[in-house]
Amino acid sequence: MHALVHSADIQDRDGGVMVMATLFGLFPFLLKLFADGGYQGEKFQAGLKKAIATVNVEIVKRSDQAKGFVVLPRWWVVERTFAWLGRCRRLAKDWECLNASALAFLRLASIRLMVRRLCKSS
Image 1 (cartoon, one colour):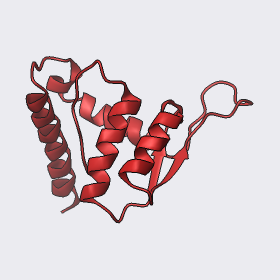
Image 2 (cartoon, rainbow, N blue to C red):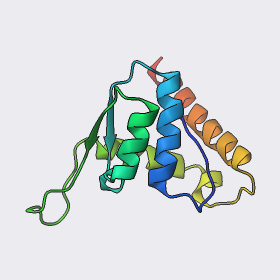
Image 3 (tube, rainbow, N blue to C red):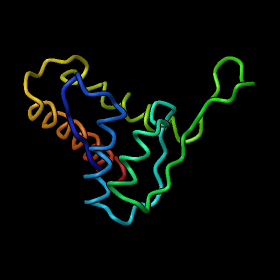
């Protein structure tokens, strides 16, 4: 739906606020956000409430009693998408010097995935 490429000196939590502010501006009907434990800090919550007050944030955490591999609800969707995008050779390594070109190749890889899926179903 939306992507934002930023420099490596910005933490994911801080970059997440920038992404969510622009994402919920484009799609105001979205009401729920699933996030992993890295986004549970007060700074992210405060920045997100400042950007959009109506979003419900659910932090997906691993159970303390779980041993070994456990599939976390809704977390697999993000990991699966990263795996699909990682199959594109250009995205496997950080080759790009400019954030704009990295975002362009990310969009091209996403378009490739969507076109393949559309062609497969018909």
